[in-house]
Each structure stands twice: as C-alpha cells, then as structure tokens.
Image (tube, rainbow, N blue to C red; front, side, top):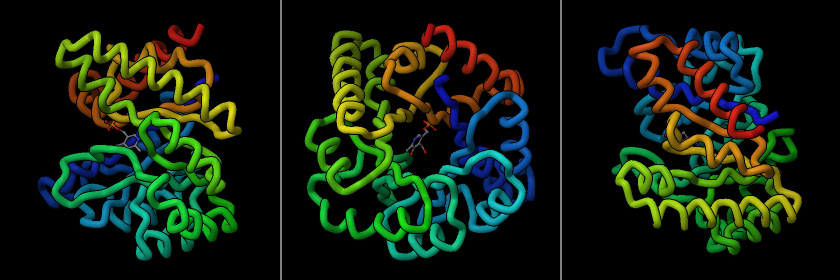
Length: 244
Ligand code: PXP
C-alpha cells in the first residue's frame, strides 16, 4: 500500500507566529496517526523558522509512528540526527532566503561529499533519503552513494498545474514517471512530495513505483476548514482511489 507521511512543519509555523505553545506539532502528529498517517515528517531548518529542536525531542520521545527528519547536509544537522537516530533522514537543499525547498539536491555534483555525509547516518540505522529532481544523473548518483530512498520533487508539476500550464505539467509528470521507473530499477525506494493537493495527488499516487508520499502545507491549510483528521482522510481516499 502507498504510505502517507504527514509533514507537520506548518503547525509550528502557526505556533511561532505568536510565540505561544499552541498549536502543538506533537498533538498534530497524534491526530495524523489516528487519521491513518503512516509516518510523520518534520523539517528542522537551520534558521528554525518552524520546527524547533524541542519539537524533535518531543516527537522522538512520544511518537510511535516512524519519524522522517528532513534536514540540510550540515555538520550541525548530522550531529542532531546521530543523537536522535530517527527512522529516516531526508536530505534537502536549503537556502535561507527561500520560502520553501525550491529545488532538488545536486547529488551528481556533490557525490563524494554526500557519500561521506550519509555514511555515519546509514551506520546509525537511519534510512537515508535524498530529495531530488527526476533527472537520470541525480538518480544514478543517489544509487551510487548508497542512499536507500530518493524522494522525487513534485513541486514543479504542482506549480504548473496551478498555473494552468497543462502541456508543461504533463511533460513534468512524464519525467517523474520515468524517474520513478529508473530509481526503482536501480534498487532505490521511491518517494515523492512537495506541493501536493487533493487535485494533484492522483497522478503521482498512480505511479506504481512510488511507495510513499510526503504532504504537508496543503493538509495543514485544509485543516483550518475541515480539521486535520478529515483532511488526511480525504487525501488517503484520493491516494487509494488513484492507486487502484
Ligand atoms: N518533501 C520534502 C522533501 C519537503 O521538503 C517538503 C516540504 O517541507 C515536503 C515533502 C512537503 O511539501 P508540502 O508542504 O508542500 O506538502
């Protein structure tokens, strides 16, 4: 079955807007679990703009679902990951001035560095995932350095859909499908995520090689109107429908 990882970063964004203890990301994680999430994803950014170190402490202590810790490939983040040993570590490129993770990691251009960076994480038992675009050279480099998982960046596909640029969206979708096939052939587990909504999730969920989707911003946005459990339930329903 296709797994759903719920990204709870933006529960922390709302909390941090006021500096209150609420809404609590751990409470969101528990509701996500009840609503059928298979895992929780949290991105500890270098500037701590949403998830905090204390959030990661609390999630590691109390969460019974697997935690996928998203982070940049920096020495500080590596130390934090090695201290917590979460189920999975997803490496993402990070720029301070960006609003969200804008592109994929350049694994092909940093093969030696990233190979060395992930070695201790693998030894510590973390499943290492690399957030990349669907280009063959990035996928091949990910396999060469020994990553277990690649998460394919669906942001461009989603943006093109929102902008009504449907021919370009379909070309991007074809690229993602090809990337998923190549990654699977190379023995990588394939995940996908970024920007997914009720309207865009279907064609990605339908890619047979994709084992997990990580979805955050849209679910938290939708939960303002319907509640988080309901939003997750509807996303699950659409994922399952697309998969059949
Ligand atoms: N996957 C990765 C690697 C991400 O960096 C993000 C955003 O933090 C997501 C998935 C989820 O994206 P969104 O919040 O747009 O659903």
